[in-house]
Length: 361
Image (cartoon, rainbow, N blue to C red; front, side):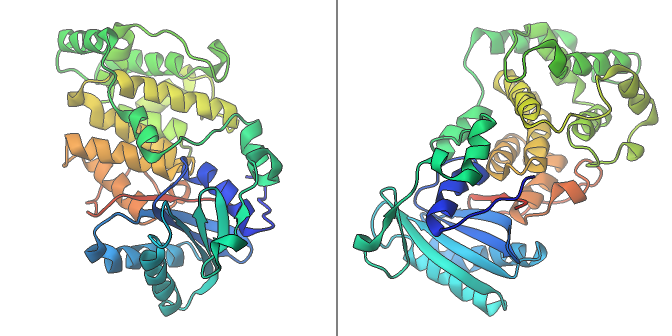
């Protein structure tokens, strides 16, 4: 990732929606700093249960330490003056108690930013996105934050359409099979075609039939196939050498490339392809599809989307083990690019909405 250079708190505030994935409000964002490099970025609602504040602060600060941060910036988003003050103060106490430095504290209200403790009259307007070089890079790549967390969450909610009903019928007709036996080679081919970015304009959609979607969704019932798709999307997480050698050999011979390209436009298109499956997947099969989306989003540093996908997966099946592992990774800020996603499985942690994004500066 290119170096992100910020020259003021207002420029940091302009950047944060792009790192979080949506425009925050009524929340506090804790931005980790490693020397002069942005580290893990975490957000917590100010409307959460005040009784959990101590536990939340402990988790957020632990994530800073795990990420190697020496300092942090605390950004409070308020609809009305003072509503982020208590959580910001608790975070300041927790950060300093851990031996870390609070580099700055700012408050954002009505599109203006000021340092905490300063009067609103001293606030400055957050600059337009195109005027901030660090943000202009995201804009040039076609990235745009969602208007709110609720808007982002709508991307992983099922579509109420005839096509979704047709997918459900097609899945029922396919029975309880997965991608084992003779179907494995076919499943690899289906995924290779579905994720082939060269067949369609990058960033564009393409019509997919109910039968095609049903095949892809059912194939993820086999954990070996699910992990293969994740490994292709997220190189090294898990490493291909840990996967079924026959599936890997078939994928090597079938997929357009050994791994998903690093081109941001193509990877954005791949995200949309996964969201299409999520939109039309029956709840009974949704945890696997949501977990693939969450793993890819977390690998890409899109912590809010990853967290939202995991939340829905666990709403449907609280015992789905990969979703529980991903939930733990999101909550504790574990960087997926250095930690295998599909290989191990572990229990998650409970708590309020917390969005984290591993951000390389």
